Length: 225
Image 1 (spheres, rainbow, N blue to C red):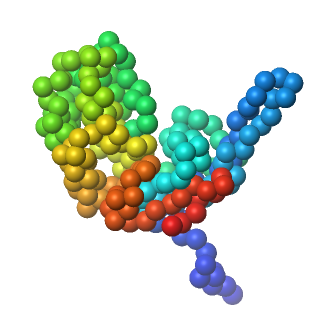
Image 2 (cartoon, rainbow, N blue to C red; image 1 turned 60 degrees about the horizontal axis):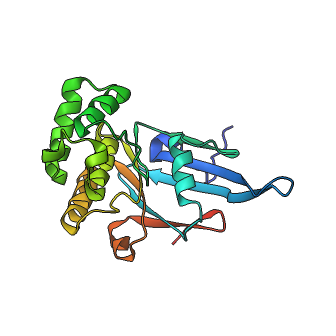
């Protein structure tokens, strides 16, 4: 005799979610010995991202938003909890992780190889992103010679280069002019229509209508808004 599962039973990750974080705990050591203590930042974060969903991640400064992003992408180890995802991740950190002496094209070649793209695939993707974000003329300019706004465009382009199923973006449009800001949201809308997902750290209240939902990091927990 079989027994039906309760209606509240959670669906498998593959059926509904492309990224799931469960029970994420993270603390950092603060202060000087012998008064050095562990300071809890994340106290059991639960977070889900569905296919084709665009979610905003908000919270006060120091609430742990960037820490969550780093853990989700694997750049930082959590103390407890699990992270699972389907498909390729693209990560745009708050501070661009670039090499000052390399040009934009050099970065495309380097990151393309890391993503497993052929040179032709990386070049085709980069040319499209250069054109869309309006910085093709800087393709052969070194990163340490770029303006803050153009560096932000390169940072975003590297996250998008491999057309990842899931984008993790930590304040991606800081430094953008208004025209580029609007182009960014056009890109997000196009990707959403194609079933791609994005988790975006944002401080702009005016962005709220652009998200499917918003999650706030408050007191070390992820709280729906």
